[in-house]
Length: 470
Image (cartoon, rainbow, N blue to C red; front, top):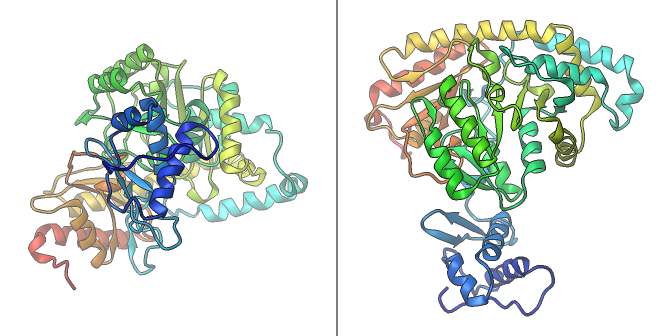
């Protein structure tokens, strides 16, 4: 690339867009080949007489188009393209992850943590039927106005310990993921940094990347996110927002102490960072630690829903936010999702306000606890983290197992699990030698026992018992 310079004399639009278009044209014409390293942003900015920020926006646009991949410390490289000229030849793990989307039907799914089947289907069917009978007109139309009971349901479901959000802070959403993404879309702009732990629910960082937000990684230790490193990242990269799971963090199951939450709130206040607190798994626990929102209520958004404790398929979710953010987030949620469907919102509201959601949650927790007990008995002697009421396990692999290799070995033995790369929010040099597997999706406890027995056998045999070549 040292002899190539973009042609910015033609085209329309801002300079960063014309620069991205010029690079794309060079790729299409074969002038810039797959694997080519683009010039460093500072060098190219000097050569074309632009700012580094302009070049950075152009490179980000190229990433959004699937044309390049950025590697911290190494640079930006051109990806290979298919004949249709749209998608790279190899999947971009930073966007797609490593999970099997179209998984074989004959495998045990230990790669999901949705609520276990405890008979909630019959309850949901009855509520659906009643809702359709009571509100035929609302179901046939678009949802323009949200009734007060939808906000009341959100207040009730998100309340935990001494945290009690007000109705004027609630936004009903299509699940927790949609809640978080609506907040990111509403309160940040393309090019802004959003901070994440190295290991986390990475589908948020991938989704944020698709709408032009950049990822900043914050270090964690055995006690969770490190406030000192959070402060370092804030000073260096000035993230607009940070995504956290303070209680029963996914995938490590770490719960932040009150002292760390207070320190994180202090740093966020000092650097004007918005906190997104995903309490989806925390809501399953009895952990008494005050929510992060109680340390920084003026800048914390709390998100939660029904997917892990009641039913994932009904897409029930809510967020609580400072009232000044509420309208913007509600509009962003509509723009991202297409709008809140009356039927789902009303069903979720009825489940919560009737107390049925709470009853299902109790039954789900009891089933989760029984399944976790199977894991603890079967994997006794190995290093893993679990919680009585949370439907997944973080397993530290013994030497010489590698995370991806162990995942493939489980697949060949009929069990789907997630390797650590599935949870990396960005390109990280840290290696954790861990895998996460869920226990809630197999239909019967016997299936859980069979799957965990496979995992135990592979751990006992070591890599010597697994041949990756067919």
